[in-house]
Length: 191
Ligand code: 5GP
Image (cartoon, rainbow, N blue to C red; front, side, top):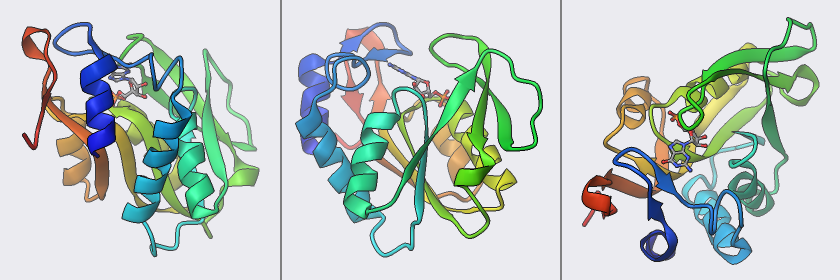
């Protein structure tokens, strides 16, 4: 998605060879026009798939997920993060290791929002090693819901997540695919 790639070139900050900062438009300050285009792009890519719900994880996945939900006309659920959580009957729970914080947290979705009748599009802001996506796949599986695919705003293709999700057989649609963050520079896969 060219508008997104241009925004990354213009306003993305390479913090290290592993981390790209996009807090000017995606996960602190939000560019609503770009977010709307992102939602439109996800909706086009997953049109006709019978998606009934979008699932994401707080906080940074919410903006693109809501825009995709608006375009597809379906509700958006965001998994909530807890420092610790004892098992409860009415929650689907999984553990996720945070790439940016390097800590483990528990994520949960209320059982009342997701069921085996749902066909889910999973959305997140970044795909790095795939921990967030796999934790969401886990909670969606606990609900007995099926997964139409995974929509990622920014994929760092040089990290393990994309290959692992491919190997698990999921359809992954990434709107910008970064092949390297070396030498303080963003290189895209398809350039
Ligand atoms: P993963 O679970 O795939 O290893 O990492 C994805 C999660 O970590 C995303 O939900 C995102 O919030 C965060 N993340 C991973 N890489 C980056 C990055 O380069 N920049 C930012 N801002 N967040 C990232």
